[in-house]
Length: 107
Image 1 (cartoon, rainbow, N blue to C red):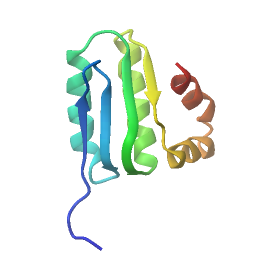
Image 2 (cartoon, rainbow, N blue to C red):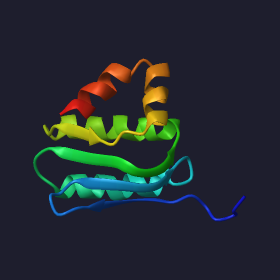
Image 3 (cartoon, helix red, strand yellow):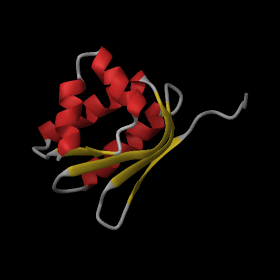
């Protein structure tokens, strides 16, 4: 087991899609949330998050997505998710949020 703390980051691609990479857990979520909110505040149009680069995600990832959805709604911007990891889908199902997750992933 490594003593190195988990890290996650967000980068925008050429089309403005926000790509999340790394390990999203209790250690990495706060710095990632700050990066993500800054990028969202600076952008326009739909918020598109690509989660396919996440190596591991736990329930805190779902919490982060709900916070992003709240920010999107306040900014009157659509939220779309791509590459949602199976583990995150399972967590959403346990929380009764699988329908919501499917809705934002379908677009």
